[in-house]
Amino acid sequence: MLVVDDDSPDGTGDLVEGLATELAGELGARIHLLRRTGKFGLGTAYLEGFRFALERGYEAVCEMDADWSHNPEDLPRLLAPVAVGEADVVIGSRYIGGVRIMNWPLSRLILSWSAGVYTRAITRIPVHDVTAGFKCIHRRVLETLDLGRIRSNGYSFQIEVNYRAWTAGFRLQEVPIVFTERTEGTSKMSKGIVREAAWKVWELRLRHLFGRL
Picture 1 (cartoon, one colour):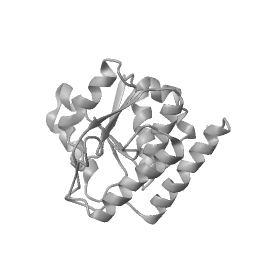
Picture 2: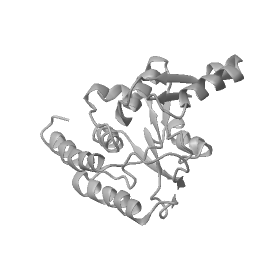
Picture 3: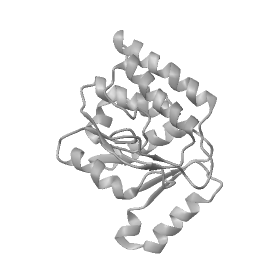
């Protein structure tokens, strides 16, 4: 387990270090912390995590939020299709088999759902939950994609990774999960993040059409 902590004021980094020390032995050695002194954004945190996994030879990488919005008990269901070779990217989807979101205001739900409709209409990507941050990715995907070319730093990061993987010929699969809104802290959603995602979809599509992706 790797926790990427951008100098969080809630003491996340200290808690992770304390847990690794408390568990000690082999289990404690499996808990890693990457501290970054500053707020560098969600996208760069994911990229740091991907590089960490590739350098250490991991076969699959699962990304998730650490605020209980994503249930750790769902991890085996995300990992299984990658492990048996059915898929290269498995997405924990909030929109397969109905809407599976707990405690979101209607405005946020409409925004998220509309983002999926908008993205699919422009890119034709066969994914319902395009901005999902709970997924499992085989290392061959990350090795094939040029991580240095991924520039998204908000929720559009998920769209970009999905789209690049799909256009590169990798198999994407969605499995249903229940997403529960965080009970502590505040969402990082902002108008700037929405604008970035709205433009990024067009940028990705045009780059692909002109062979510049």
